[in-house]
Image 1 (cartoon, rainbow, N blue to C red):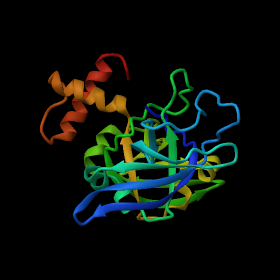
Image 2: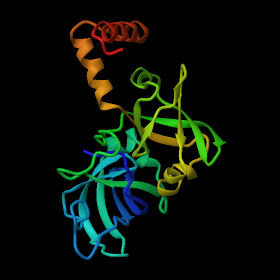
Image 3: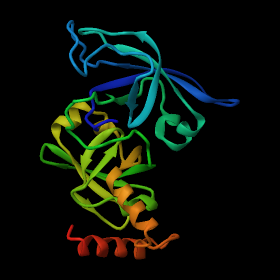
Length: 240
C-alpha cells in the first residue's frame, strides 16, 4: 500500500525487453530515498522483494544494483509484464525519463495522502495547464469509464502523486499543483497532451461495486442511471 506522497524524483537508467518477442521488460531505476547512517522506520535500505511505486505503478524490487546510503542514490531493477506495459505509461518511458518513486508505507507509518494500491485504473492525458499564482492549474482527461469515480474535493492518484480534485466537468477534472508538488514530483515538466497513470479513489470503487451487486446502481453501461441511483442511495443513508 502507498500514500501518494512521492519520496524521490528518480529516473529510468535503462530498460531491456518490452519489444518484439520479448514482451516483458526489466527497468533499472535510480532514486534517492533519504537513507541515513542510522536507519529509521521507512528509511531502511532497500530489500529484495519489496514494493515500490514507479509513476504510480506497483513494482517489485527484483535486484539491487546499488543499495544507496547517505547522499547516495539507490539503484534497483524491477520487472514489468506485457500487461503492465500496455495498460500504463511505463511502456512508453524512455531512458533518462523522470519518474515519481514511493516505497510501500511501513506498518505504523503516517498516512499523509490517501490509500493508493499502485494498480493503475487507466491512462489519461493532460488537457490544459494554466498558471495560478505560484501554483499551476492542470486539467486532465481520463478514460470516460473512470469519470463516475471522480468527485470534487475527492482524491485521485496521478503518476503516483496524491492530489485533490478541484473541479469536475463532463469529460475531465482539474487539480492545483502547488509549488512543493511542482518541485518534488515530475508533474511540472509534463506538457499538454502527455499521458499519465490514473488510479481512482479505492473507496469510491468499492462503494460503486457494493451498490452494483446489491442492485442499487443499475447495470451494464448505463452510467448516468447508475450514478443517479448511487447518489440517491447515499442521500437516503445520510451521507450527503
